[in-house]
Length: 524
Image (cartoon, rainbow, N blue to C red; front, top):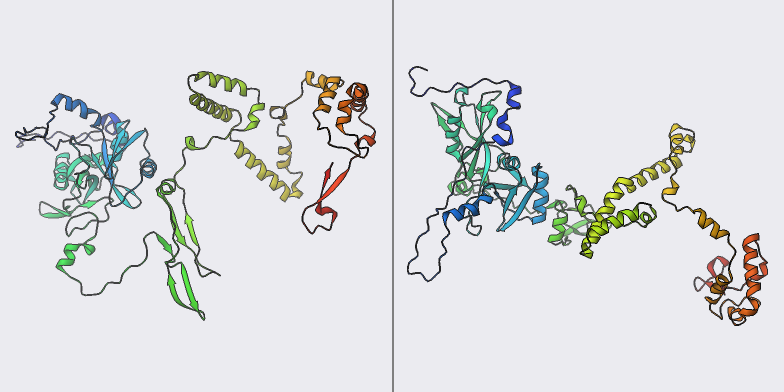
């Protein structure tokens, strides 16, 4: 335009569809307004006269060492210590990233997060603030020479609003200057930057939680409020995050209260009743105490991160029952489920082939072979049988429904049930022709002798008192008779019942047995 030294570049108008599908939102075009700044100087001072040895690292080597960490984020939970496994489970469900990430414990409550792709990194950095168990996760970009032992309370990325800002100020240069007043500008909401369907300015900035935050800004002849997304506990009296102006120590020192405050005695994690024991006298409560507690260790917290203790109403006892609510909201990883081997798999015709193929792949280590076989069996089981327990539960529920509704025996539901395929041959072994022929063969002399000689000599006397030792000592004499007796019994399916007679002894089940049903019959 005439009269201006630097003509302003005309902004191309875009439709709402073009904005949503804008290539600027794609991974390759994610643009930060500032890059990582090396806050610590790389200049190394010479320590002359000092007995402590000094190691000097060339600048080129420093760059190689720092390059893998350039895209890393540093996180810390404000005001709470969380176990490592709990943190991994919580942030996995909270962030819902597309790729994998690696979490490294740096101690002192700091964790380094390395991402596989930059989209996930931008999401974690830009879409905050994040909260775990009602405590903020501070997110900051990694910087060189980051020492956790001496690190102060970290900065975090937040979105700020400028409600009521005139539309002519919706320029990137103006919004960046506004962001610099609060912190380090990281990104601008592109929909608002291009004045498309935008009602207020929205800027993502990195703020230092140790420095006071601005609540207002003067533009032209007007004062505009600055709102911080998601940061509800901000004191604009001292400008520090973590408390409100009503709880600010500076405010209390300036305006001391002469009114006595009632002390809160309820535990933060306690729900419902405070006391667990009550003493009554003549129907009146004269004493209440909190005696009962839940004792657990860090492993239980890792396994049940949402664990809560609830004191319930007492009925008969003077103690209130305590309910431990695990509230499992975090899904368990399928890989962590214990492996259960089913003996029925051995009868399947494909099992040996799957077993041999997996076993041969890891011949150098027994442990690796077992793991390989386990994974192969799981894959084979899922592809051939699916979820057996789910199918079993479904079938059980259907059978229970049949038993509860006998008048629906002729319904379409039962007709469909009768049409289910009966593939018994897949699970129950079937005798082949060779097995059938072996069953029809006559008993040999060797089989009768083997069965007889395995019996103990003085056992099973019977009414005739002829014991197995009698046949063993006279085998040459009785062998033909015993063999013919066994073959005739198999062919005709019957025998002389006198040979089956035996003595029975009744053993009482308890000392005062006086009924026949209270005895165990044992054959001698």
